[in-house]
Amino acid sequence: MKSIDGSREINDKDFIAKHMRDVIMEVGQNNVVQIIIDNAVVSKATSILIELKFLSIYWTPFAVHTLNLAFEKYLCNKKY
Image (cartoon, rainbow, N blue to C red; front, side, top):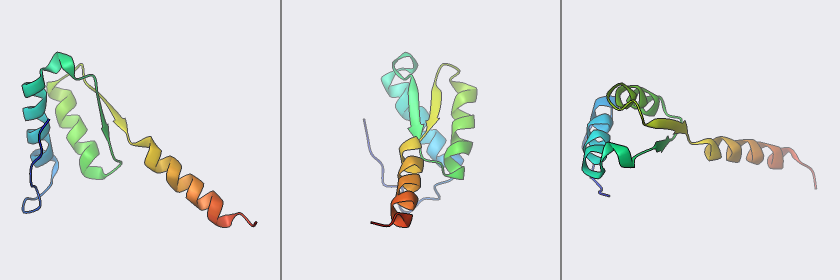
């Protein structure tokens, strides 16, 4: 894959979608089945842009983060 330094860029849906499209085109659309994202609003907006162009690619929110938050809340409230 590749990495980019986006620290001096506005990381909006268009910026992220452009770089994701570049990677998808580089590896080939048929080689990408799923993209896992965090639950940030910009990621959800990016997923819509990518799905419009690549109909065979599925998006999955980063469920592990949600589970970690749930367990953290449970463990913090549990008395030992």
